[in-house]
Structures are given as structure tokens and as C-alpha cells.
Length: 368
Image (cartoon, rainbow, N blue to C red; front, top):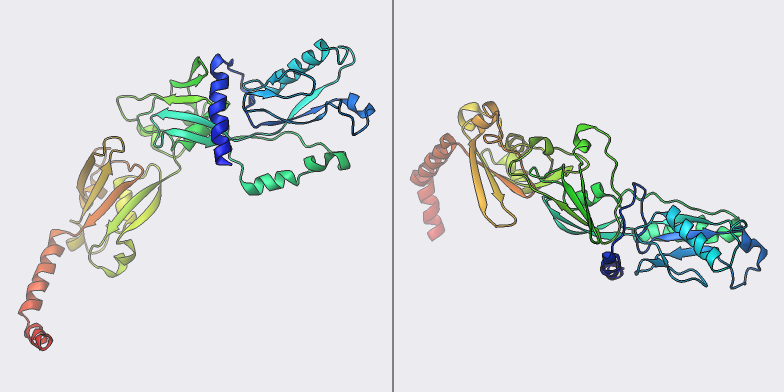
């Protein structure tokens, strides 16, 4: 099934290269979409007649609808109302119907998955598959009243596809980075390019989402600075991030489960909050207040690793900016180290154990 979706994406990109006009904010058609064509004129024909027009049609990989006795009708990138208008004109021009007697309805039955490209300032740029239909959903669709519409007299039409929009494509690509230029997001369709401002998504302003079709290319430009207002869960940013935590500080017993773990933390979590989540903070102040937290970050593009070390006490009490208490990004690591007092105590205990007569006697028995 994925191979078929990949082929659809490639062929669609070629098909729309000649240029498809940007639609309004209604969802345009893509290959694999299914529409239902209805006309009451078919009621006068016997069920087995090959001249029946009504039926279920799927948009081909070349972007057209194959209607009986007509040339392939363009559909990709067009809204359903436009397809209905063009189909009616084609039927009249071919002499199948008179303009005053033709009654025609074209409605969407199901929206297919589409593949689009997302580049630029997202955490996982690349090709993304939107509006994926699972096998269970597909089986449920096949058992829906649509499949038995001829027996029940009911026709099921309409199918909301919230994942075939610009915001869903950005979210599927990992969400926006703090350096993303939200006001100049570019959408390339065929040979046409248009720029959109999605900053209202984070400020609460009304921003109409942009519908996508298969083969669209989305580019998120970069700014030269980080925007702290983007480091929070939203429709365009991640809800959670994966962070690696390691804490083997003394006392060992309560920290065994935190020795090394992969945690999901809300996007916008700071280093101080991760240190608390890992169990690095708290306990006896004289020994634990000077623990250290180390943030390990690796640049995905260059592979360069950056290490930031902070005192737990300083991190909790005197961190009032992004430099002292940075935000965590996906795949960051946080490591906790014991304080100097705890380390010295451990060394003295080791020396005492070695110098103890019981230790020497125990070694003698082991040597025998």
C-alpha cells in the first residue's frame, strides 16, 4: 500500500508541473480521492445499462477522472464545485444532455493520503504522508452505508480531512524550530509559489489554514535568532519531546529507576525542570546542593556536540535567562553528578574499607 502511495506522489508531481492554480480555502482534490456522481436521469435506465453515469469515481494518478464516454476530466488541484461545473459542461457539449434538463451532483466520499515535502526549520524535514488511512478504517469504510447505498437508498457523502492542511504538514515534520520564520512560510505548487503568515496561530488571531494537494512543497525559512514564544506546545510545534535522563547520584536506591531512561517531557521544558524530573534536586542540602547537571546537545546537521554544565543550586535559584537555564530540544540528554562533598565521602569510605582488618581477612580467605 505504501509503495502505491509513493507512486501516486511521484506521478502527481509530474502531472502538476504544468501549473495548477492555488485554490481558495476549500480542500482541493488529489489522486486517490473518491467522489460520487449522481444524476436522476439514471433512474429511468435499467440497472444493467452501460449508459449509467451515476457511480463512485476515483481520481487517477494522472490527476483526472475517467467518466464513461468522455475524455479524462481534470480534477487534481480543483475544488469539487469546479469539477461538477466542468463535468456538466462536458456532458452538454457532447450532446448527452440538454442544458435545461441536466441535473448533476458531484460530492466527496473519501479523501486519500497525500505526500508533500517539508523543508527548512522543522525538527524532522523531509517527505511526510498526510491523512493516512489505517486498515481498520478502510475496512470500516467498505462496510459503511455507501457500499450498500443501492439497497438502503442512503448515500453517504462528505469526509472531513483535517490532516491535509499546511499546519498538519508542519506538525508531521516534527514541528517548528525556535528559529523558524513564521511570517514567510512558502508553498510551492507546480511552478507557482505563495507565501503565508501563520504567526496568528500562536497569538490567537484568526488564520485560515491552507489546504494541500499531493506534490506540494513547503519551505520554512530561518531567522538569525531564537524565538522563545515558539518554544511551547501549539498547533505548529511539538506537544512533547524525547529527552534522555541519567541519574546515578547518591543515595542510589531511589535513583535506580532513573539511572538511564528515555522520558517524554512537554515542549518548553527547561534544564532546571528536567533536573527535577530526573531526581537530581532535593535531599540533604549540605551534600546535595552542590550537585551538577550537564546538558548534552547534538546538532543533527553537523553532528557537533555541545555540553553545558550547571550547578543544581544555581540552576534552581538564580537562573533567569535562556543562557543560564536553556530550553530542552528533542533528543537532548541530561546527566546528574554528585557534589564534591559526596565524592570525597565516597573516597574516604573506600579508603576505610581497604584499611579495615575485616577487609584484609576477607581477602585472605578469598585468596585461599
